[in-house]
Structures are given as structure tokens and as C-alpha cells.
Length: 206
Image 1 (cartoon, rainbow, N blue to C red):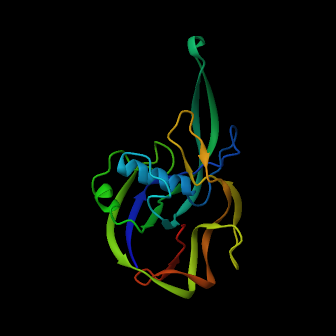
Image 2 (cartoon, one colour):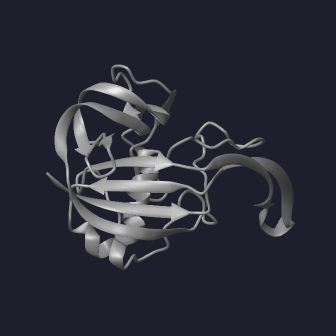
């Protein structure tokens, strides 16, 4: 089956744990699906949901580090208050994004809004847009992605995360369920899509 493969690269990336509000701000090791659909929405210029395209991705980074960041909390007419926190980030991230809706090629060639890998400071560039043919294959190298909880042989961090957010005010987290976050590859004996050019399996979320 033909898929659109998009390579997105940046200097930094950070994907916040939903449960952490203040203090040390760790990052998830891979982007949640809500970030992926946020990328698609930014490129298209309007809300994109799982009904519009199925997605898969492989995400890697060079290293992980911690920096100090000043946050200014606005208090209306009373001014503001500063707060210094430690924030974890990923250095030199690379995201290979796979879409079964080839119409998104035109959106990524001319994105409506900036492409981010996390926060507004995590600016990214689109390095490659390519149509690739993927086959269904068993016994592949799979990982560096987010998987539904319960996949045989998979391991990693278990976290309840939304699939996407609504565009209402306030925004609503939709499709929240447990996912397995993997920043390593493993040998998967089951069946999934296979990118023969890059020699890895791609889990497509349908």
C-alpha cells in the first residue's frame, strides 16, 4: 500500500507528561498521537482527526538533557510571578511520519502554521516528503514509536494519553487510553507495515 512519508527534524523536542503541572518537567520519550495530529492540523490549517487519516511514525533523538526555564505566571492586574523550573528536552530529534492520506502532501509542502515538535520554541523543518510503498510483513524491527497497550513482546513506559484534542474552548482530550511508549527497537514477530527502504516496521494507528 502507498503511504506518504514525511521527515521532520529539529534542534529540540519536548513532550510533556500530562500529570506533571509544576516542578521538574520531564519529557515523554516519543511524541503522543495528540502531538502527531497537532502537526497535521498545523500543516493543514484546520483540525485534523483520526477520521481523516491513519498515522504511524518512527521517532529518534541524539541525546537527552535538562535546562532551566523561567515561567511567568500572569495574575491579572496584580502583575506576574516568575518561577524557575527544570525542563527535560530531547536534542536533535528526527520524526519519520507515515500517512495513508496522500492529500497531505500539499499541506506539508506549504504548511499553514509553524511545525513544532512540542512547545512553541521547538521549531522544526520538513526535510523530506516522499511517497513510499509499504508491504505487510511478519518478523520485523519495530519500535521508537507509540503502540497500543498489550502488543506482544513490546516493552516501555505505559501512559494514558489522548489521541487528539478538540478545537472547542476549552479544548477536550479525546480518545484517551493506555499506550506503550518505546524509544528502542525490538524484534516483533507479529504482522505490521514494513518500510523496506529504511528497514523497519511501522505501526499504523487506525
